[in-house]
Image (cartoon, rainbow, N blue to C red; front, side):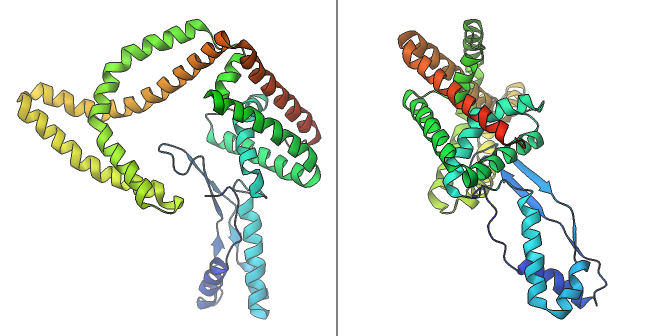
Length: 324
């Protein structure tokens, strides 16, 4: 789950050469490198970008294998490593993991807009993330002092956000003059309008959802398997809870129309509740920043100023790194 390609083992090469050898070198075998890039491996409804690379033919390596099998296996594995590295987000040094995440949070949306790309397009999003990572890797090697200065400023900004429980996107909205009272009032009206459906969805879906999350957190020691356990346990629990809940409604009301409506609303209200909760958190985030602006304008302006400084530093660095 780290955002880097670890050193490959030789199993792929051994299997491929072994298959060709067993068929008297007539298979014409190719190996397709595939890069898997998770936006948030543990988070429900996060995204996975799957990148397929160009097929690598075994034929150019066969003669070398006949002369020196270990060397051919080494050369093929090395080439496969190079091709795979193009398909994943690869941060050279783990020390920069947090820095890359912070840059994505602060700067990626602006880069997407400047490049005429869409944040909703996962391929565009991945391409920009790769460019950010390449820039960080480059400056970490060639200008570590600049990286350290940017890291220090971003840490100060992130610490301030965490202390005040404010998100970067709210500051960006204010900075871009998009945070309007009229929008907030509309959001509050929508919150009250959707509250009954949210409560219905929460009551009918929360228990299996919570049990699966809590159980996965307790029993799964390795983060790689958390999502799989959570999803499969959740599916099992919903297959148990939903029939029991439907049976209970059927026994209580003994009305076909009520039962039909309940069956339809049961999963739909659950999905609505998920989106509603996200909408609720965003609205409260906007309100929190508005209250901060009214109570302590100096602090709010300091946050905006810090963000502007960071953007200016990044724009300067961008001129020195044309790929970005």
